[in-house]
Image (cartoon, rainbow, N blue to C red; front, side, top):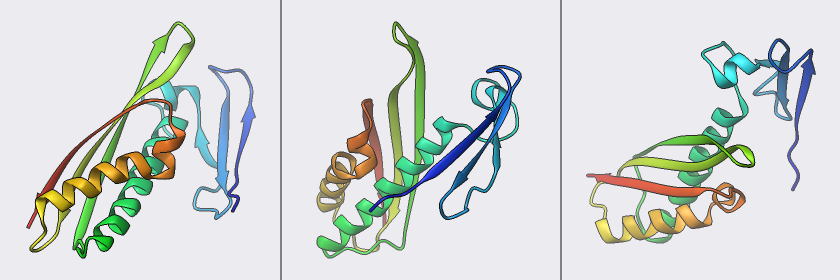
Length: 141
């Protein structure tokens, strides 16, 4: 399986601008820029897209693991907070923290936490990232 995304950039790093497009066209010539990445400019940036991808991947993986433990969530909400620091190698994604809240009527806390840990380690985006990944998970019945 292959998935594609494209980027187009015009101009210099600080005054330029670009667009991002995904194969599915969910993003279609979506603007991105230096100011969207490092300041409060409009448009998206690679780091928020990585955070969204990680939240989505983890949540779907968790749902599958819960199903294997005979639990089905009414709802799982995950927020991924990505930290990018300037290191001796330049700007580096150093951490991603996942905040998870799952509503599972009659859910078993131990099985839930086990599934969370396995999803954190096992989702493809987690395995791709060379960053510290932490998670706080709350089971709501």
